[in-house]
Amino acid sequence: MEPFQKKRFYLFFSLPLATFFYYSSGAPARIQNQAIVNRSKQNTNYTIPSDTFINNLLANNPQLFNSIIPQVKELGIQVIYTQIDRGKKEKDKVKFTDFTFGLDANNYFYPASTVKLPIAILALQRLNELKIAGLDKNTTMITGAAYTGETEVMNDPSAADGRPTIAHYIKKILLVSDNDAFNRLYEFLGSDYINTSLHAMGYKDVQIIHRLSVSLTEDQNRHTNPVSFFDSTGKMTYRQPLVTAAGKYEQRTTKMGNGYMQGDKLINEPFDFSAKNRLGLEDLHKIVRSIFFPGDIPKEEQFNLTQEDYDFLRRYMSMRPGESISPVYNASAYWDNYVKMLFYGSEKTKPEPGIRIFSKTGTAYGFLIEAAYFADFKNNIEFMLSAVIYCNSDGIFNDDKYDYDTVGYPFLKNLGRVIYEYELKRQRKYPADLSSFQFSYTE
Image (cartoon, rainbow, N blue to C red; front, side, top):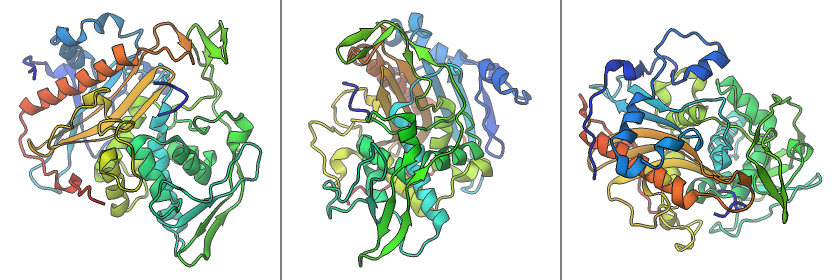
């Protein structure tokens, strides 16, 4: 989350087959609505998913969603819910059935901290590509400064041994959505590598082009710090000099709202997001799925990761801040459900036993976003859920007056719980083996 932004009911209804579609994992996911199909001009030899399922879900729970339903367009709500059905044998392909609501790639939302997830993944991928002896995620990483606006990092007080490492930065990103940790991995990778890699994998619309929570120009964000890695003996294993990104970004005109605060002054004109990061919900959802089912997606959408990498990401996506001993977090500031909005909202309640939510959230400029894989080890169920909601009724940005507590958090909490209750009753032909997603959280 970005610091400059303050911050059992059961469903009984049937749906005709036309209201959803599924794909076998051997083919690319198709979860695009008509707006996306028109824009991308892709082959339309598939059924465009309907909003009917989730629309019915909301309508069948008026006590939870009556105040939301009339405002879905104004709130910019987008949802993707994926049912997961395993085969009889472990090696059988997994079937994913996707339901969408309001999904529209043309409806921009600021992705906030969700951009940290692909950067964490790409940092591990980059290490695998370099193939340098003595260089891994636990190697000491020293960040220099060689351009205006850059800052250096010589140590990390939050690490038990004081060493900054890629592994420790990823932990902080996934545990509490640390901004500085993201910035350091952004500087290690550079925007050319980030965007070229993601575009080659099919995430064509993604633009991750700036650091978070620091005010820098486009030129400064194109320049990334020199980085050096040292092994346990103090020997340098790899050095990356100052890098200047040369890539050309797609020019956008994205302005929103009625005004924005600039210091103490209100500027009465829309806020310009044209040079801000972009990561659509469909791409974010697919990135999460690739972490849990890499063998069940097309080759071009798979990251270059080892099994150890996948387990590392999964563990820290699901670990609670109170379970971490390096770094250690203050429970009053970082409670166990701190970044699990799709089931707990902003509540500081005790986590449900048996349930682990592997997710990445984002909160900034009035947008709340989360993409999650849910695993209930007690009841042996699993599903995926991603959603975004815009909580800025006055249309003014940077005024610290967002409707997170009254609109956003309750909606995400209720959405996650209603779908979870539906999943508890949903019939599956074969039980899911979730053992590969169970971890020890004792460090």
